[in-house]
Image 1 (cartoon, one colour):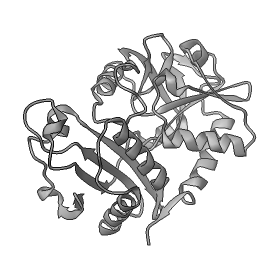
Image 2: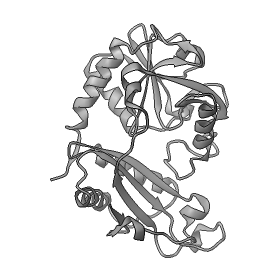
Image 3: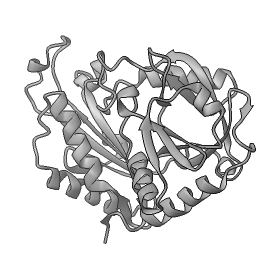
Image 4: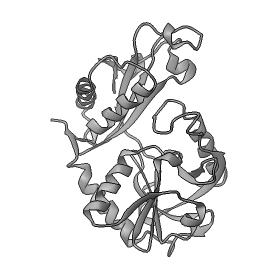
Length: 290
């Protein structure tokens, strides 16, 4: 495996960063998880645009135009001959000292790109559906850390994932400080009720996921009414169908929440339509690796 470290392809054993890197010391950085489907880097330009938006929010200069970062990702995929898989692109503020002050990071950002594989959930759950659990760990306040910034600070999500595991669940539903549903630990959440598709607003504490964006586009194409709104656990419990979306997770049905069957307790017809349409998008929307 070859890792792209600051533009240089190196074996993973030599892909190292300084212990003084602000990403290591303070989580001062951003990342993108990106999928490759049949030599197509799905929504690559959209991912890079979001990466640069996150950098701008953190007042971080990536040091290259978006087009160059697109080329670096493609170069890494080609070098690893990755036809289908997962890309992790990480940018940190770079090397500084032991203090918090980002002005001490004078050497420029550090970035690395990993092109490998990932399996988030067992394949059987995509067929039978999964059971998920609401956890006590709350989503970070938007006033504290803007959820639309895909930062390296994922401790909030990790604690929620751990709590879900303690309950024997593969995934958690995270609630915000107002008691509204935000998202799962690494996925967005959707549900159907009487033919209408609903998902929490981004202001509820959700990340604007690329798969989420794609599903909303699919709904429009299929003439399914889609509504971004405030969602509560009551809405999920009484839903006809439910599913999660994420780059790593793709689209996965949810059939039970907090011990309650969703709808009939099996993946629904509308969810299956979304999954079928999404699979078609994965090989047509993005940047081809030749």
